[in-house]
Image (cartoon, rainbow, N blue to C red):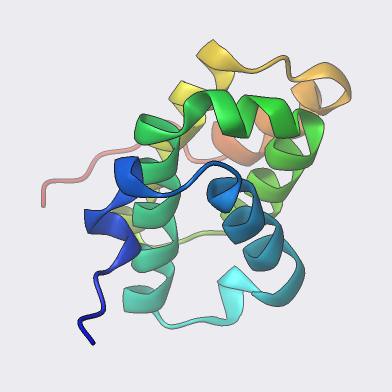
Length: 118
């Protein structure tokens, strides 16, 4: 049986899977306790799901926004921050932040100004 990484099959996921994946990650994964490479994988998963399953994630509403903010909080690696900022931009433009407006501001603004060349 071939296993295809979620980052390669985002649009082929059946309805409901994006929400299940995100809820599982929010509940079971302490992102900031992972290695840089594993945190990068988490941000890549968010990126693919936001790109391919945006409407489904929007259906999660504040649960998705809050979970993402917790995942991104205290990220230090510049490579991961580039991915996290890309996700944050998509979230800011496509979600109602509701009670998490200040938290989103705090989790992103603490990094500016940023100067990084990969």
